[in-house]
Image (cartoon, rainbow, N blue to C red):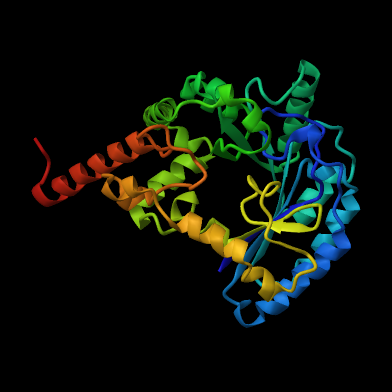
Length: 354
């Protein structure tokens, strides 16, 4: 099993982004009990002892803003848990809107494999130029220090108003190694700001345009576009091989809230919990609420089964809302790739069209 743990150090943040599922500065001023978390991860490893050689585990320090807690606490979690699984990786996702202390870069190098993730979104993240300038300065510092930076961008109305190639060029100019485009779900602050959501049709058209412009300008050589790559991979492996399209997130993912409660998907973690750090692992695994979450994720809208790209899409994330008969999947891109694949197969069988 490929496990994923989101380790939330806090429920609050120094920013108040309109789309944030954790409610930003309005989130509870709660900080983790990192010693209790260490004990829980050790108990989980003991529970999986017969499968440790085949299991993988990625632990992501998260929040709120994870670096609001003392750095030594995250280091302590890493030191006590890093050898529990033979195949184990670590990461952190941070807003980078703060003065980085001298210990942060050594921490990233030692504990996070020289890699960190951050976020940028047009108009909904920073309150002023001082915040955005500080973010840019910190990104530049990390890149100049040889740190691999992954950038998350939420697909909002303002995001899709940017021509895809211009956005990709800007990301390239930052020295970013990976780009992840995230579609919005109706959680936390996002519920208070419905106008930031693009329509499913607008989003669908923008992804197709991004693909065409990426091909035209050779953007694949610039950095990894994780979202587009996840679509391309479906045409090699089918929808059962990773990503949100495989519909198994709730089976392999735990979000450990700073309150000590435990959830599945981090987007809905502040609202829906199925256990606590005090529960034994078997009880947690078999929680009726967790099983119900898995069942909801595994079910499909009946319209999915008659879709012409279902064999590649598989239904997409169950938290993405339909709008009339339009789902949140990048179906136009999938249709284009499907037709292109059929053309390639025809050419292989029959020779060049000319």
